[in-house]
Structures are given as C-alpha cells and as structure tokens.
Amino acid sequence: MIDGHTRVCGVIGNPVEHTMSPAIHNALADKLSHNLVYVPFHVETGEVAAAVKGAYALNVLGMNVTVPHKKEVMEGIVEIDALAEKIGAVNTLVRTEGGFKGYNTDMPGLYRAMCSENIRMEGEDVILLGAGGAARAVAFLCAEKNVAKVYMLNRSVEKVRMIAQEVREKTGKECIRPMALSDYPDLPDKKYLVIQATSVGLFPDEDRAVIEDEAFYKKIHTGFDLIYRPSNTKFMKLVKARGGKAYHGLKMLLYQGIIAYELWNNETVPEDLAGEVYEILKEKMGIKDEG
Ligand code: ATR
Image 1: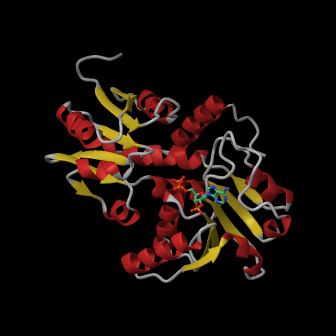
Image 2: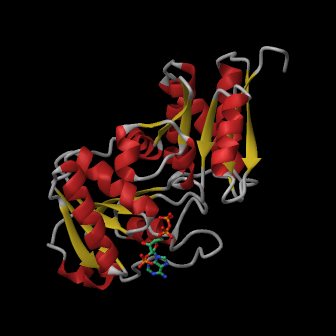
C-alpha cells in the first residue's frame, strides 16, 4: 500500500519504457516488506542534471541511470565512487549530504553474476570482445580482479588501444592486449573465458555473432554474453555447439539491481531471495529452458 511513508526510487533513461528494473526492485521491496516503489522516468538528453537535482529535492531515495545518460549524469552528482570514476559511467545514485553520489553497479553486478555461476576471473586469460561503453567497463573489472591477460578484440583496434592505455594509467595494470577482431586466429591455442560485450546479436539482430567462424569457438570453455535479449544469442549457440558453457546477461542485470538496492537500503539481499527475483525476471522474459 502506498501511503505517506512510501519511499520512491526509479530509473532515468531514454527510452526507458522497456526497462526490467521495476520488476527487480518492486519484487525486492515486496519480499523484504519495505515501503518503497520503483518507477521509470523518461528524461531527455540535456535535462539529466536538472532531473537529478529535482529528484534529490523530492527526497527520492535512489536512482538508476540507463542509456544514454550514464555519462551525462555525472554533471548532476556531488560525489563519485572510485570504481565509477575509473569506468567513466554511473548507473546508480545514492543520497548523501547535499546531493546524490554516483556508483557503477553494472560491473560488480557482472562479477557477482559470474561468481553465482562459479566462473572465475582471477588469474585467468580472458578474451573480451568489443570496445564500446560496456566492454570498457569490463576491461576495468578484469584489471581490478587481477585477470592474467585480457585479449581485447574489436573491429576498430584504435579504440582498444585507448582503453588499454587508460586501464594502465588508472590501475597500473598492463593486462590488456589490444587486437583487431579479424586477428582472432592469432590467439594462443588454449581454452578461454570469453566475455561478449559488442552489440552484435542484440534483438532484433538475433541471427548474427561478432565472430561466426566455428574455429574460434573451439578456444572457448565458457562464453558470457552481456546481451540478455534474446536469452540464447547466436554467440551462445556457437559456444555450446563446440562444447563450451554459455551464459546470457540477465543475471548481470539482476545483480546490478540488487547491489543498487543494497546501497539504498543499507542491507544485504540474501542469495535465496536473489534466486526468487531471478525466477520472476525469467518469467517476464519468457525464458524457460536455460540449457
Ligand atoms: P555499448 O554501450 O553497448 O558498449 P557501444 O558503445 O555502441 O555500445 O559499442 C558497441 C560495440 O559493438 C563496439 O565494440 C562496436 O565495435 P566498433 O567499436 O568497431 O564500432 C561493436 N560492434 C557493433 N556493430 C558491430 C559489427 N557489425 N561488427 C563488429 N563489431 C560491432
């Protein structure tokens, strides 16, 4: 029941109408008996700082920020968490004295999703596909988690070189090996964890993978696609066809939400509750079989 004590959280984006975040947060509030509602806010580019300031004045408890506002929102906050600053993107706002503080829960969310599937990053050799906003963040996560080597492949190799340099400057780690996408045959012969962070294969472009040559997929023991729409991407199908394990990005979405919820409410969401909310998300997405 909404009453005079109800706290408001929400997500700002554009478009925001297809967001899954209300399903995550309203389910958490319901199961934890918190008097909290979570709503979408459609905000135009150029209005983000004003929206954030207004939300603070309205005593909004916390906000998520999605595309295309994860950079612009930095203009509207009073403080930024160290990881979010390195990554250069903010997806979560937490109330603090005088304004919101910005965090990035996407990468801790990816990490927690991988841990929940028993996928290790520490000390591993990883192939990272892409060099856009998502891949850039994954590159920082890899450095932070002491991945041994990250072979980072992208269509435009110049973008990877810039990210590798930034990671080196900001973390002191020299783990990124920039490569052109087409140079995948040069990868040392072994089995890798591969993180798919390009937009190729995203709905409605479902019939494509960023690399389609089956020979590449022989090198993959685990493939993690950040895409969750569709839930069985072409990349995942190719990984599985060559005997690897494959995962979509829905658990990353779940855990980035859970970490934000934990920050706003100052409490830890237990794993069994995370599992219950994941089932709700899967049902909303029409995902039945994870195989
Ligand atoms: P996001 O925020 O989801 O990371 P982005 O910043 O637009 O999105 O990045 C998209 C990524 O997908 C980039 O790595 C892009 O490669 P380029 O940097 O060379 O553009 C990659 N990508 C998109 N379409 C592609 C295609 N047809 N073939 C190969 N890579 C593609």
